[in-house]
Image 1 (spheres, rainbow, N blue to C red):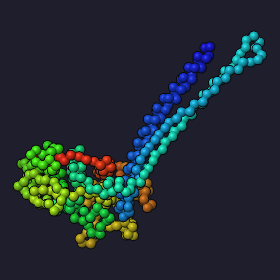
Image 2 (tube, rainbow, N blue to C red):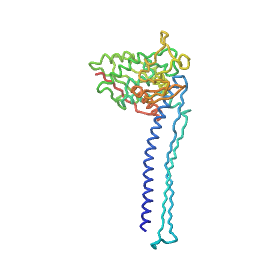
Image 3 (cartoon, rainbow, N blue to C red):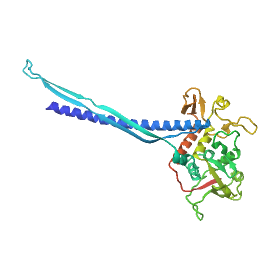
Image 4 (cartoon, helix red, strand yellow):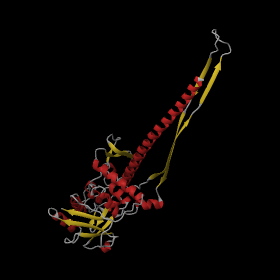
Length: 364
């Protein structure tokens, strides 16, 4: 009888051990899936940015569903045999056998779908709303970086608007906008620089404003910001609009890029082999003097390098047309911009909707 109790304990212990293994494996599988999704998303985004640099259309495949099942199948057998003839001491010895044969089965799968039709238009062809831009700045992103990536035009300041598509033959206009965004960013970095309100008292609550307060030490830069944008230098509060037919000296008319435009713009930061440009495989631009234009002057915060062999120091890399393209792991600025683009993709996917804040830039 004692042997039977011992056997029962062994079976219970074995089953308990299987349960523990299943739990650990589930945690490990979850971590593996998370890493796999991040790597796949990063590689897909980089690959499509590189494709756009070569004038080819991007294709995005999204994971629509995932499943992961861990199954434990156990088999066991128990036998007890008693000898027919007794031993010399008159006792009747017996033999007992126990066999446990648990098996582990991992059933995993994922469903994928190509983003197309209305969902594609909604995500990639709808302009980014300016409240999204201000919310990104409020969450800690650099004003200059967000403006450079997301905004195509403010009043008569053009931010390389021809870069929203294939590589143009002539270099775009960008210098004045870049200086405007740089000055605005300097004012924004001052203490108590930025305040958001869901509504502005005593005013139409649906309107969005930017306020520049002039204080000693930064008045010159505040004046320069207004002059560059063609604003009334005696005013401090300016309404944000989206209709250029309604432009005046007391408002900022803003045109944001679409997500596809953001990707096209970022693709200008992809460095390609000179042989591909000479062979007209990848486009190139010329400046006003007919010399090759360096797109690093425009896309200053995002750089994708290339290599013949698979790079060893890459944050993310992909192979395309027999060449490796990658973002270096020690290129913090490019990694940040890449993360910002990914965040914009998530926001557009979720049909981000935000109340209109009041953007206040204080010049101390």
